Image (cartoon, rainbow, N blue to C red; front, side, top):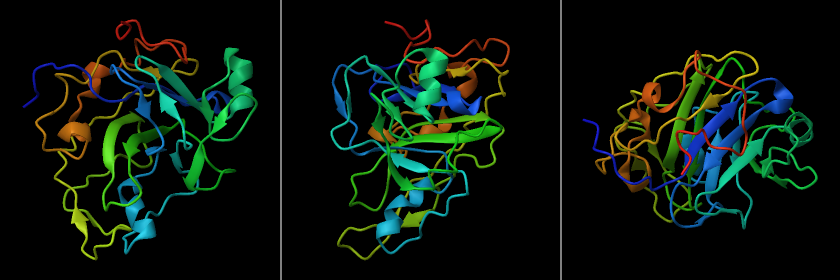
Length: 253
């Protein structure tokens, strides 16, 4: 059952560009009426991201592939109400291609804040053009479980979004018992691969397009694995050139 529309209440991934490499970026929008501290927010393209707390606890632990990564926003980072921010893979190439400075980058560059590499090797990281499962999530650094914020699967991924049903993790808290994630519906479908020179863009909010009954692993109990991406993102036929920092007109206030 998909709930009736309500006001957007958490951050959203709103655009992804996967090629060419020097132009890769992920765009994030704050549709709420309040500023949000990003210090506990993470981005990842690896299916083992839900195991992150286990890396500093009793496990199980993340096992990322060679080009995969888990990144955290730097301490003090924030996003204002209504703001759109851009995280680029290669800030210098992004600046040349789009004539603007990204807000954050996988690596440091002039005018760009560097993301903190939590898991992964900087020289190998990328946003795979052949397809990625991308996760925006939050973790306070002490509890056993992470909290999904937004998930998207672009094209046919080497690794997709994991099903956390029955997955248990023991993180760095004082307790010695593992905590278990709630069941995921895992109905998130893959977006068709868009043509070179175009990007993946969100065209609708989640409200009314995913289960929001308070029984999921996402913020406010949303089940981010249930979003109907066919309704909330554009298609291969409607995809247009990248517009980093600018919301799709369907989302603009």
